[in-house]
Image (cartoon, rainbow, N blue to C red; front, side, top):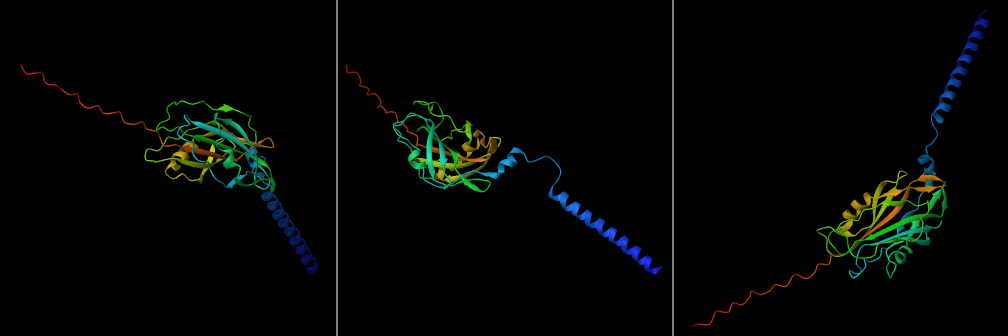
Length: 255
């Protein structure tokens, strides 16, 4: 009789233990594979890490003799080693010289990653050099022209902002701003890649107002870095008007 009771108790303990074990396994399995919708396009695109600038120089500002605002937009191919392999002008002001390509050709990048593998990718570099004047009023000069169609791999500007010449600034300056463009085309983050001293804040404020058509990788919208260059030329102020001496009053002859 006693043996039967002990045997029955052991059987019940084994059943309870098995139930607890199965419940624990089910709980762990449920936490590893939560219910709900699959990853969004933005989350899937996180497998792609965009190329990012490590270092490089910026061009000098053009001479004040070059009138008007100067714009130039480049599509840069960065190879899997981080070097610039190709540059394609997308939009540019008609000038006798290239402003960006001599400097940008020497830039070095952290190459893009696709699922952990270094891959070639494309990067946007856009530049605006202000006219040599204080305000943003219309100026003389030839407007920029389109030269090539951009790749879907780069965020492409659809709204831009030209910074004003800071009232307390002196001389010329060039500021390079790195912006992280989100999958919605808006600027998510900003960073000074090259400082221009007293022109930095004006450049950052202008870059924050840009908006883009987002970059795409394998058909999906992804975050991508773009590089916005702002050149400030010291306003040319004409000579002050000549001060004319007062007219000489000749007294009438004495009678």
